[in-house]
Amino acid sequence: MLLAVVAVSLTVSVLVYLGLFGFAVSQYRSARQHEQSESVDPHEFSGKNEPETVYTSAELEHFDVLWKGEYGKWRTSEYSANDTAYTYVHGPYCPHDEHALGIQAVSKWVIATEHVWACDACDRTYPYPDEEIGDGTVVERAMKRRIKRKREANQSR
Image (cartoon, rainbow, N blue to C red; front, side, top):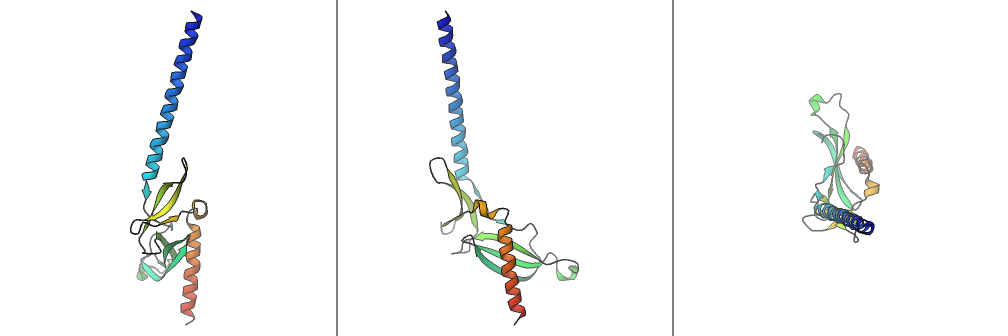
């Protein structure tokens, strides 16, 4: 009798563990399929609104992709006496055809994925710098330097 109880409890526990394992595998596969099919539109890398009054604009190739920036004020000049000019960055864009890039997850190994920027127009992909890009301030600072040099060059003429 005791042997039958032990056998039944072992069988039930094995079935429960197999069920949990099967559930975990199905959840993993579902999440992985969702992640691989997910793509994100490009976004602005500035915490500010796009300036309404633009004094100058520039392009910058950083992280192997193209970024566009504008230096200006949020409002038109008649209202902007107290506004401070700022740099606004948007992108990324494909350096080959200037189409907006989206972010996609691609399989790297059996269980690993990596993010890439992908161009829908030319099907090129560019590595997405997960650690380096942070909140986008790296790109914004580089664009500020580019616009500053451009403005200084224009003023010295």
